[in-house]
Length: 426
Image 1 (cartoon, helix red, strand yellow):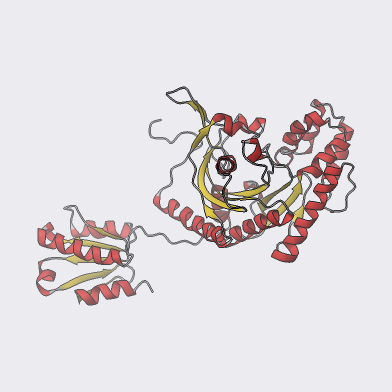
Image 2 (cartoon, helix red, strand yellow):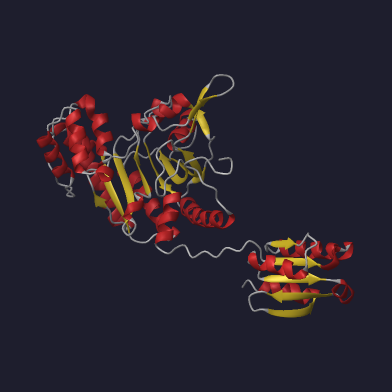
């Protein structure tokens, strides 16, 4: 057991970590192109903060503990709440505020494909824009980030919680049971309609009413009939977001009134993104509007909207789609000083420094193994070039270069040899 990572976690070996870093950097580039600045928060927060408006089910997934002073703490299960804490504590920050993050989070839930108990999220938070323009921007950033990362054929579904609540109230859901109803409805995609009808019956909704409600939730039109002022306001807001996305950003989305999102702090617009070709992975991104969270935490009343991309799921989708085609090599140049004499080792280190300054990854052989074994190791590490330095090379000012790709050997003056290696990258 000591040799296994804890259940729901994984180790990232160099090649896997490199792919994750390359994809994350593509996402980071998009975030920053929209003017978002990176923010880093502690891995753990006060438990009371994390429980604020998270929703009953998510609260049960928090990894929590007491520190040595008896304080109740928990590992962050998402990034929105910690970032809202920062915004609430710094009222002088210039508005609107645009933050982004690429960090790990933790949830104690059943591990599944593309989602472990420790997983990475890349997301943005936009504070201070109340209108549909803010929601449209967040969706547009999501679209561009996923496109830049290489995902093909994904679908963005949008909704507004106020519309869903109107539909629920119109189908005999008591207002005080709305949080329970939303939590149940969030499982529609996972468990199906029969499960929803059974669960709604437990909170006092007749099966016939539940069936009628599900029919209306399947509508994708923006001209449905609603009965509450809040529902009509939500539908109008949703319509404007959809129009902005299409006419301004060139992004087409699908209206889906069953999308609610599981976190309890969402107040209006919500959305989810799913790949069309890898639907069993689940959603790879999602988010929405949370206008009350900052004030709930003691800050000013501040409109906000945000989103998160599940990096682990994104990598799984890219893998299933045959991407990303990222070539990883641990080392570019492997230098072998023969006989391990001080002079040859010193020259090897000198050459390594010169190549590293040019941005190359260089290893200097440090064991007493044979030349054949050292060359075998260099090949396993994916090194393009091997430099061999012995007494003959030292006395003549040359370097012996083995091109492991072309499988040829060169004996060149040091300056020419280094020039050839450096220029081989272009």
